[in-house]
Image (cartoon, rainbow, N blue to C red; front, top):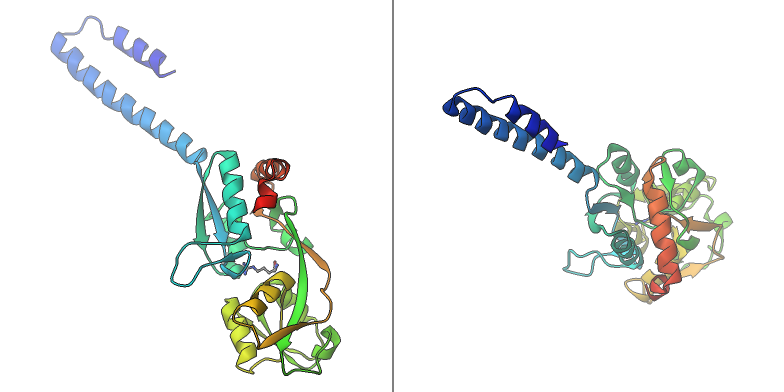
Length: 262
Ligand code: ARG
């Protein structure tokens, strides 16, 4: 297309002085370069190779940062990187508050949420989810010295520590008479329990179980059954075709054994 424009303009110059021709040609070339750069720039942005993923990284083993490291580790991190690779896109991971993730999708700050996010009807009103990639569910964590709390029912009137904006926070809020304390990070959520400022934590069972093998070792325990199954999905902008692309990549990773490896 640019060639045609160029050809037309140059041929229309025939007849002028050599000097005039040169000046006009130089000007045209400059304009053309800017035009091409402008268009190219736009295309590059649209087909940006970088897939920007948002996460709240205090959720081991799904997303966390090793002590003294800024790198993001965990199942979701490996999986979204593998999905990006499958799609031919680099993955950039951004650290944000859990309650900031869906707003960041809607403002276009990130392309995808990779943060152990449960697929819920409420969230589906705001974003589109990929196919489920993991099945989780909530559990109750208490200190080892706690003998009266064995189920959700026993939390009535108790103090429950949860992460802000999570399904655990919703569950805690549904317990009659419970006092719910919300925190930005799960480090704070567990600290509140072990400082004896809360009676229990409600959190995704695999995350609670992992905590019990780390900082919670010898201090805390899981009680009761896992609550309802909660599938995790990658969230993207509502109706974005990115969901289909992620599903395709996820399917390929499941088929080629990469998913199982992760
Ligand atoms: N699965 C829960 C939810 O969707 C908790 C997720 C918390 N994730 C995190 N990276 N902190 O609400």
